Image (cartoon, rainbow, N blue to C red; front, side, top):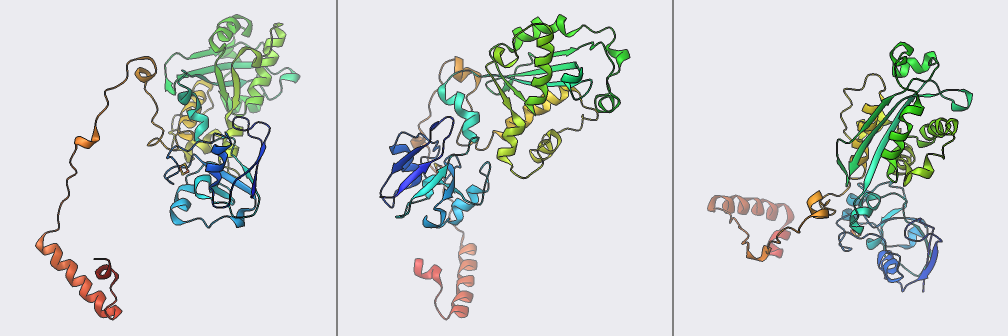
Length: 350
Ligand code: FES
């Protein structure tokens, strides 16, 4: 029997695995049979992309991709030349090596599936320059909160007096002058409120190492533990975007354009505006297949279930062709008869 080697995936298969399945089995079925619970939102009917995998070895041994799969693959995240929908990829006799993409629609959906509420904070900073190790400091800090993927309005926005001027280049980017900041509080005075606000949440940052480096520097100056140790997890949306759109520009501006997020209000970089844009980008980036993955509303998470509707009670209206339409159809068939020497397929099918 052919062997499927599955490369490590942090959620489905942290150590990687090797399984075997009879030829003719789809990769998706084989994975599920071996408790590797890859998503399969359409129940393997080739109507979603949640079962997307990349076949690193043995791609050509699989059945060919048909038109339907090809169309769906176009919508898959992080599409690669050797991408397949695993429910449509059937094993032959040859072994294959398969990678389950790290980010997929599953990433956005995982908490909903588990039925747990999800608090996410989208964070951005502005700074006096590029290097916290050379004395650059945070001057603006903004957080936008989403609860179960819906904005709550419970945001935070601080301007901070850094006790020094911004570098000229940084000033051109953010436009926040020392004059403006001179009566603002020092980081120390906002730290408690900020840390209480982000405590335990998933914090999403575009190019997270940059902002986290600055936050860690500010916290270390106060003798506080690192930022990452005080939140649920830090997710770098830039790393995520690079996986989803390999080889493309993935700046916040580029993502806004690609994902149709309106950034017309963005002339200078402002932390609050950028955090809001990032939240919108993230929602669009993780909204691959709303039709199949219906996001629960708050009431679904916390309140009573909605009444179910029995669709069998509905009668489907079937409009019939008129005399005129039937005559026009017959005319076309006659023309086809003539052109094909009587081999019109539509007549055979009838
Ligand atoms: S499970 Fe939907 S296409 Fe494979």
